View 1 (cartoon, one colour):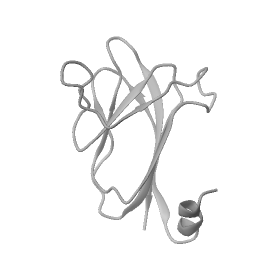
View 2: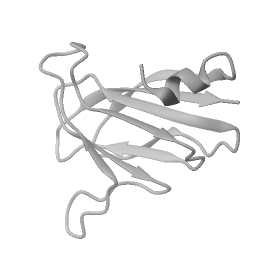
View 3: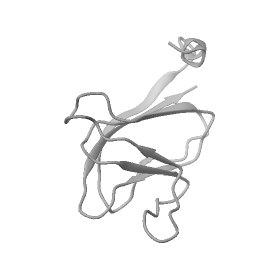
View 4: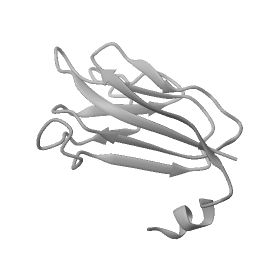
Length: 111
């Protein structure tokens, strides 16, 4: 367990812990939240997931995204890409490419 997680223990709560389908149509998995302490997103599906802060990812042409979460070795195997971030309070979007789909778990930790 990282120091960041140790510091959080007992000092906050989980505001949102939801599973989302990711497709080529970008969607918000976390709305802006000024009370957010940190966030976690894990790809538990079989396709790469593109993450962008504050706007929808663009995966063709100009390539505007913040992170790529690697696919899991199998559906819900738990070894897909994980993003944890401390202190970001804005919105978070996810998308895949073409006809690809995947699944992510997004958890929002608040004060």
